[in-house]
Image (cartoon, rainbow, N blue to C red; front, side, top):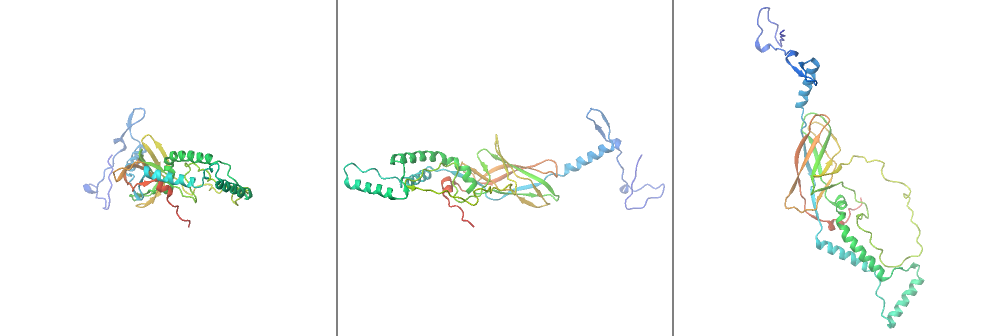
Length: 328
């Protein structure tokens, strides 16, 4: 049976043919067939038509967003041999400056008298003489210098998180609809490393570096324990005020998953910053990364390439020796 609808005009008199442009013919449900899971083909029901219409509607509702960097980049961190040798020589010279002088040769009356006066002064002092001999102290210094040379490259990730430039990314909604729970994942190749930025503490020293020996010299005979008003309280916050990006190693490199954000139409939001660094000082000026985004408001995902600039190379030793920021 044919159904006719009229829009904006009066119904024509009985027997008159309605104008073609004002006539709309509906499609009967029986014109659509559905193949069921059983393999049987049968005419569509009204509920089947509704589900097909919803699928077609969602198919046009694609995720359209943009990701770009607003600050920072990838920092090449190097360990020049000249910087390493100079840094180690300065550290060894600092420790050897407190080493005791070699013992005076036998028969030298002046040196023997000076040594005797030194012993008498130590006996009268409130300080405890250093129990180590000169050779023991020099052995401690040599052992420490060997461990220090081996440990310096292991500090790169921690030093980068403290003092390397941070990469700030911004995600923007290019649609006219609200997008909820937009999650961005960033694929990083294996020659680039990713760490979370960390706030530098006063007196910070990389944890991977060995503890140096105590400089040679007397120590107080009576040392009283030092108590702090906060020594018995845990001042670690119970929970973070914001979620941190997740960094996961993959066979291809590293995957960074940023916390989901809600985006208003044609608006953007800054993602949590990360630190990217590389041990290679490449001749190129940028590194291409691949990113993916999903949203609970739409089906599918959005993927594009992101060119991240390579910043000027930094010496690891210079980053370690860089003065910490002043307290505010």
